[in-house]
Amino acid sequence: MRKLTTLLFLGASIAAFCQRTVRFADSIRNVYHIPEISYAVANSKAIPEIAALGKHSVNLPDTASLNDRFHIGSNTKAMTAFMIARYVEKGQLSWTTPFFEIFPEWKDSSRKEYDQITLQDLLSNRARLQAFQGEDDPVIPAFKGTPQEKRKAFGRFVLTLAPVEPDSVHPFSYSNAGYTLAALMLEKVTHKSWEQLVEKVFNRDLKLGVKLSWPENQKAKDTWGHSTENGKLVPVPSSVSSQLDYTEPAGDINIRLKDYARFIQMNIRGLEGQSDYLSAKTYQFIHKGIPGYSLGWYNIYENGKELSTHAGTAETYYTLVHIDRIKGIAYIIFTNSFNPETQQGVRLLMRKLKENYGS
Image 1: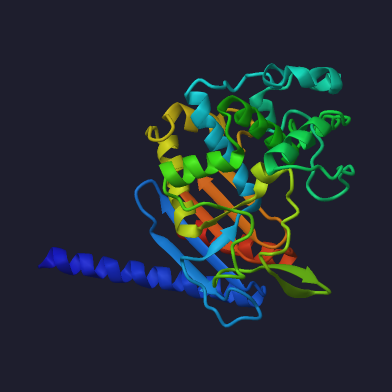
Image 2 (image 1 turned 60 degrees about the horizontal axis):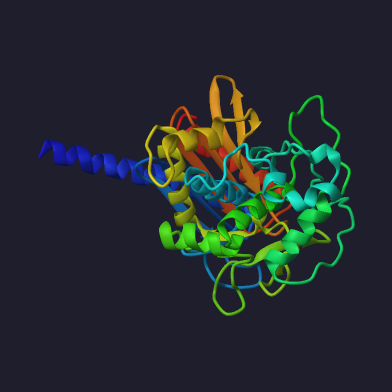
């Protein structure tokens, strides 16, 4: 009886603790004018906290739910790297495979500075490619064809551009284009498109319910991303282009928070030495194999802590994930807006979650 009483007390204490976090998160959402904010805390065995707060759009009464989908922007990079890792383990590529070993016919028309770039250079942002992040980008020709054909034309174009000059502070230069080239390598050896491989790995194999581009909000009740115009949030319908043509492997997946948390749990288990869809050795390399920026993850060592972190946005949603590799716990925040207010609100909530769990 005493044991049952203790368990009931612990359960009530945990529920009260989580409820306080929900109240804090909702206050952040209101103060920083974020239409919807969802967050989760995950370890290798459980998801001790998960919540969805707010509305699908500033112009709609639809309330948030854990079935809502969010565009995760550059958090797609970790998923593309994970997917490529599967085929590295199958022996169809290696991390050190040179790009021009897969596309030798492109070498003569490409800049000589790119002659030695490898798969891991592309995924760790060490190929010195132009960023293609939406600001000050070189003018891109209007390529025609299927998404795969357009990516190939874009990739060939990227390799004709002058490389980014090395930075004495950072050993890498962040580039969405690198993920397009890495995906092209995978497409060539598997004879499947990036889209087909996303469906195979994340949906058929792992049952994560991944979709591409914006969440569907025209035919279904789901989240609307929000841009900011003249200081006001403006809902963006799913019929509007994501403007990620050619760089989809770097940032164009949408997913439910509860499914993304399962993906992160796989990574935590791998970091703890457990093999599943990938080997533990591969998980270690993805997160920690390359200093500064590894494969789809910032690889951070500071103040006695080890972190894998990444943010993602296509300027309408904003997502942030931190994995505390020492404690084996992850903090995930999804929102459906992007501006400095959203970023500040997310930073404060991330700090609160970490304080709660001692990270």
